[in-house]
Length: 530
Picture 1 (cartoon, rainbow, N blue to C red):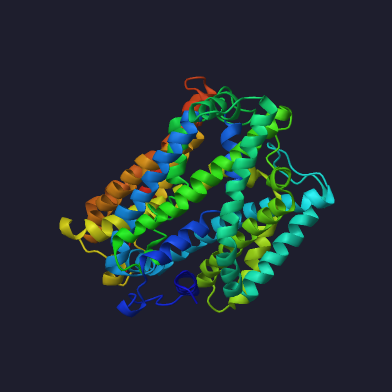
Picture 2: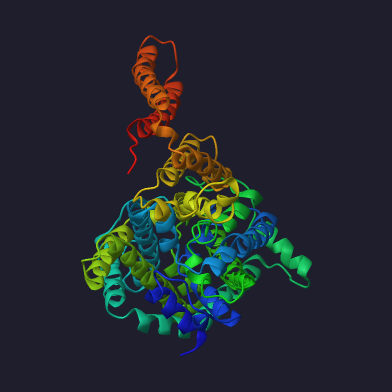
């Protein structure tokens, strides 16, 4: 067994779940290079690259944006995640349990498991597009939300079912196969890029005699800029950079990879994440986008983002095999992780049963192309969902003691639900979600201020919660009065709209703000000392 296989089996096999990793189990730098290079060159890269082109991105914006954004992602692993991981050497789940309490971590596991299911569903979608090339059934288009043929549904059921069964029976076997497939798969992605470039050169008649000529081809034919396709938003340098940074927010800023880097001898080993970022999230994205751009160049009306047909046109059967394997080898561990998250909620159920059920959920999700076709928004939403808890872990580890408060408060107080952490999570998500859905801040950018807000809110609420301010009589009275006022305003706003005094948008904004405040006030009102 090589060190990469050892890393994956230990991290995902659940060793040292409730204790620090001992020195004897620590791993070297090379283990993490292989792990990240393989894990971040996945089937979803074949969806993400084309969506940049669909967003009307320019050549400078996509190339330089990916360089900058991936660098920020690597730095986030190095300076936010890994330093905590190599000091505490605990899994994220156990560290959160010590901070937040068992009941809050159960909610976190549920949210994490559901998002893992949807992500695995997108990978099933990718693999199913390769099946469509052989059986020639109708496949979903760029803006389709629902399955559009019986053939598509059957393909997803077969692919998803096989992935779920293998995940339930033999994760270690697939992990070994993924290790074997990883270098071959990376090079096939590179081949996609070279073939796509040659196809562009042939179809445009452009003479390439220098790097300058190649850059001109990129600007004028591949990433031309201009208006996005219908249903897509216009992507700029900032969109690309923030997407590259935050598409793995759940792992670095959200601290999920504490479970990985707890095995690292040194925190600087997190620089190994660059292998995944610049292989998968730079080379593979650009290669996939070249294939889609050539498809659009030949037929502007063909806007379908279907990895199977694109890969077949570029590399034949090897391309189709790559699409299937890329989706399979990444969906499998994703379903396995989701199963572990759900099993933590239902410990009496067998891992086999829970993993099969998880695979069934992922398969149903894979039938609906909306997830894969809107993958940019989905992975950012996934990062946003877990981001506040990353801020909680960061503050609790580095700052909370310096402010005269207790770290690992749930463990110290024997509480099963740390309301300071819970409200920091819920309120941050509510505000960020409102900012996004109201159109005030795009999802690409809302997580950055959200992290700082969650950190500040956790500090404030911890001071309030740990000092039992909520049990003071004056605070209870203030909370009750505030609650009554809020309920009155909730009724008053629609009445004012009925009379024409306020606009509907103001009513919507006001009701959402009052909803957030109400749940904070209500929590203060009913808080009891455990």
